[in-house]
Length: 187
Image (cartoon, rainbow, N blue to C red; front, side):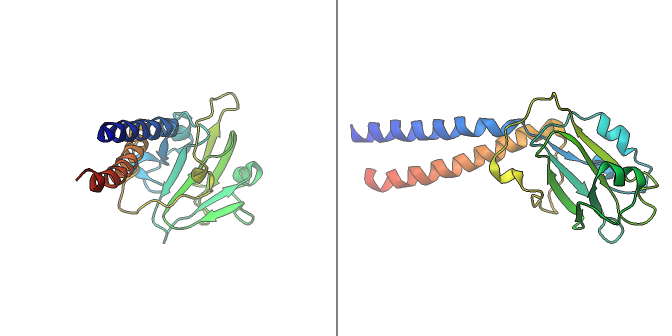
């Protein structure tokens, strides 16, 4: 009888963990420029790219580029319009920079390499003030989130399932650990 009670308790713990992970599946991951990435090659229209997206608070914006030739600067609207990179709010230069959107409104970015912003390597990520806020874990509120250089960014359509999958795999690991606690007492 104790085995049945333990199995029911185990099942309830797993179900509670799964229910708590559902809240993270609304955020999306966007790779700026899609397959082209963050570049001046190929005449990517970043303005057009951005207006086709439905950004929300909690979304992760990935800038993927060659750090020998580009960088990413987060700037004010005035600096964005002038393409003057002398006083950025933040500068990123890893070649695979992830930025989590934590507020509604406009978020302005451009490449600080001379001539690149003027050539169109700039983007305005706009989270409309009337959009619904995607629930986010506190770990995603930092300005950068490390992303492996070996894993391509998912398309926005795949992002929710990827985040849910990561949560499900985490829960599976926790469930296995909890199960392991019960196994020695069964034998």
